[in-house]
Image (cartoon, rainbow, N blue to C red; front, side, top):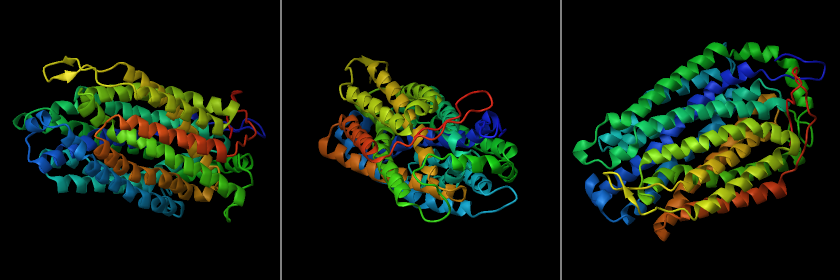
Length: 477
């Protein structure tokens, strides 16, 4: 990172994009995992519990699908429970690791390659109607992705001064969403509903295997690009002075060091993590069940889920691109509050969107309400504002020697929410027998998190920093 003058910092865009390859691999795999696995679990559990063929299940009582959602939620939550435990562990371990290739890279490379090998076995076991094998492979992928995820995310603040992290986080999130978008395109051309709606004899392994294999290959390639272009140890030495300057300009109530946190900074951390827990409760509920919502409630093709994801992803990219500039003007706190408010409005609209009842296509699918695309677009933009500013606020409160540990706190809050919410919402589906509970549940939690954030998080605006090109290099809290 080049110094513009005695007080200026310049964000290295090329290096930030290269670091973003780590997030590219993460969201690529998660998009495939979240889009396919809940439906795999719904199909295999419903067929086992009711001893039905695929055709019988499709023609049978729709309540049978709702009745198994709590089991689906437990499996998805168990994965997240493991993440809740492992993410802080790997973050702290990587903080203390010293190797010739850096402190994060050993975890990134190991986690990538093991996850990539195990990932294609999930659809293989599903196709073979092997519940135990599928769940075990899901667990293996989760464990090693946790080894990968925390160190990969910690890499950006490791080599980015504090005043530049929100803008850098926006660029990295855009890279991640490109990975997710690639997975989404696969889902459009290979819609999961084609497999789910097919008779037993017409189900072919390649229909569900290809997205997982492609995701594994691209994840490995992204890790190799990262390893070849980002030299941790060398960059840490080159950027020492810039990191010290960034520390002096941090947006915190009291300066941070390697000692105990001040009471003011501790209150700030707890408030951010508390609000984060609530909005991840809401957002993960939508992400976990939207595929089933489209297939079983909207009676539509899973390709529409992928198109929804693209619409939301494109809006998120716009949100990530502008979030840093918005935060410069109104502060990170109010940027997050604005994003939460926008998201609540989108889900309020979603409450009034239901299946059209008009049957189209040979498989008897319903036409898809265009209004839901607008809902997903608005939601994507709103949540981009939230996610872009929240992580930098957490790592703002720690020294450079504790970035992995505080990244672990950030993910502990999100993963604990993702552990609770699939089970809770699954039980609500089972109790109400109503898919419409999804936007109501998520909207209420988003609103609650907006209130928590607005009331309990201080708005601290740091000194703006000019980079070498005259751009505001950021920080607002």
